[in-house]
Image 1: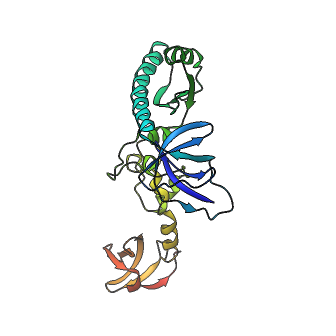
Image 2 (image 1 turned 90 degrees about the vertical axis):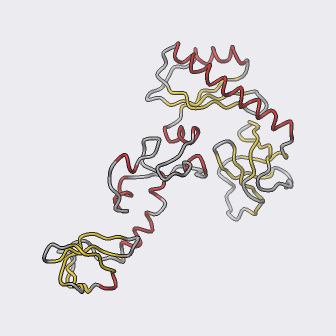
Image 3 (image 1 turned 120 degrees about the horizontal axis):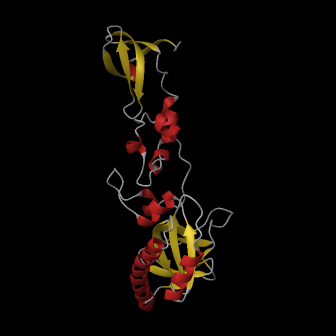
Length: 268
């Protein structure tokens, strides 16, 4: 089975060819079908053979190449989405609904508009849907999403200076815990380890396995060791530099490579 990686707005997913393979290459545009909706997607890879027995996670199929008319419709839809966002905000404020609008999406054929929002509790938005349907004369869907999905749709830049991982390449969110930050010896300052969404940064999961593997090669903190400058106790480790900080008997702290230490006794 041949597949191709495509990006629909902020989502990068794997699409199948419904019947026969279409001549598509990276950086081109195609029309895809997902859950009955038709969208324009950007091709992110060359076609390749799917090696696993199971099909891709989503029922997404490539229908054809996108032509100039399709791209013109996309541009018109984007302009309408910006206007619909402004209108929806006004309606939300006038009805005093406790919800934060995140994004608006209109399908390629114009038969559906989706309004994404976040809220702490469930919202009765039936009257809001009626207002929007009366204006745009199409099917209106209201979708409540989480704060991570909100950041994925809005986009932005992290403290690393890079575009947010969720809006750039992540296809799904992995569970992230504070223990992952501890394993990497990171300062447990919420402002340092939290993303724009206010939750723990997705990148905490990228290297935690490497830190756990490296930790097995190091003696634990509190281990007595002999260094070139005298006896001491391991205070902490730097897994990236492959060094440890040793507190000498004079309470002096020195940095040593692991290979330069002689282990005297395990941690008590």
